[in-house]
Image (cartoon, rainbow, N blue to C red; front, side, top):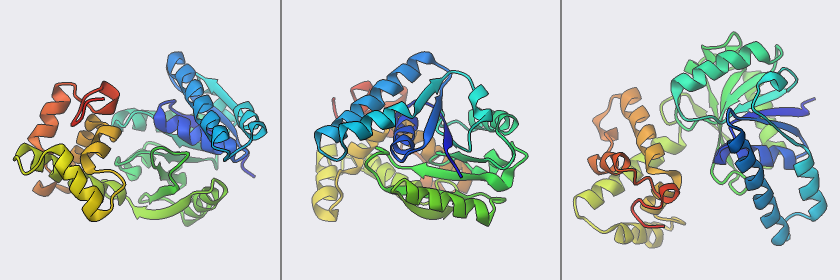
Length: 281
């Protein structure tokens, strides 16, 4: 019976994942290398749960119970006690591989190690461990507490049992799992990023303003937000990194990142988080 969950990374995704597990009744240990990140993470979760109470989706007692199930640490020592791990660290292959090797040493035998990566090969991460059959991708969507989809990514060696366990866990969290194979970008970003990239090419070539392109996709295709607004929300640096994974991994020129996207990232115009992207915030 799984009771204790370890989450690596106290960024936007890590916090959201920790909140969802805590709300579902799990004891959650959140680890990050920086104490400041953990403090921001805790504050972010408190703010998010407060909004749910305001909107009447949960009561104050549920909020307090969820907060009571969270622990924060800068050390990985506590991961010797957890029953399940979700890694949501920085989207960098070598950082993640090193982390998986360390987690493999810390976690008890039989404990599954999962990654929230949006595009990095699960097979590559699994190969850094001695338990590749217990490694898979659990790609949550942002914002995690609101979005119901989880992409479950089966690596080359992932066992059917591990996939079944993760599928059942998604049900406990109130999420809908969709299985994807371990190819660059999985399903979500394999389809989404070329659309965003094409929208950036359309801006660069003067086909339309960002407002015009986003309006066409919202009103014409019924998307809740346009691709350029979405790119600003995700972070243009993240979009560029995923496109580079697609381009390198599949070798097809259709995934070539738009030069304008590269230029904006080089200028530090990363979207909402930097105050400026295709729009000003």
